[in-house]
Image (cartoon, rainbow, N blue to C red; front, side, top):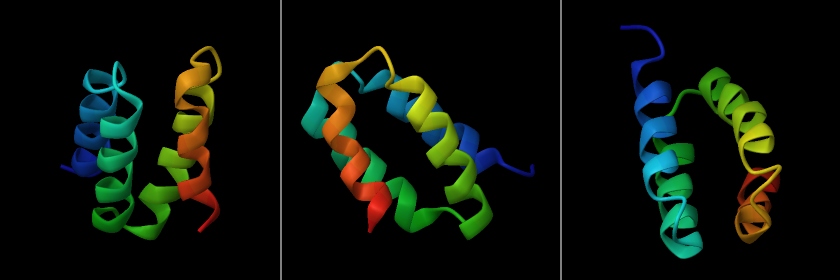
Length: 65
């Protein structure tokens, strides 16, 4: 069950990646829900995931907070 919330968050983010606003909303929820070490893993995953998705680049601002 370890990382199940992290995996769930990744799945949700992938499914809503068609809409940048929805993606940001779900990312904010994930950052509030996950444990600190899971947040770090999500950051690494997110930076790799949005490399070829310029419309999702603004979501990186939530990682700086």
